[in-house]
Length: 125
Image: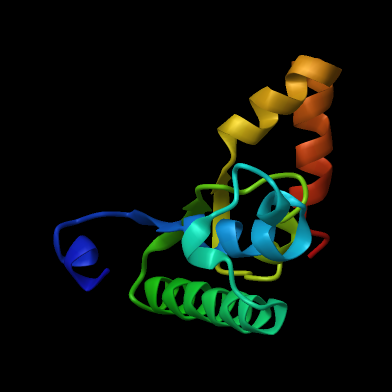
């Protein structure tokens, strides 16, 4: 991150893929399907602990980025079910959630899919 700032970047994107995978294994039925993430087939208490650690790492990275003057984005695996966790990290000012919105739009239409995500990601600061 420091190198990004040194090279003149204005923003960094934090990769939320591990968080999203942990969240899915803990809060959905993916672990009981053919799409289970083998390396995350762990006891629930361990998944919960690792999920908390993942959120702490994202928070620490976001705090550091903001401290050194970078804007903070986050993305990868975020969806309508897990994005609320990112909304608790105030340093994050942009989310990249394209796949989930497009997938939802197949059932609701693009306009409604976007409106629903905006409702979930609007802060009332």
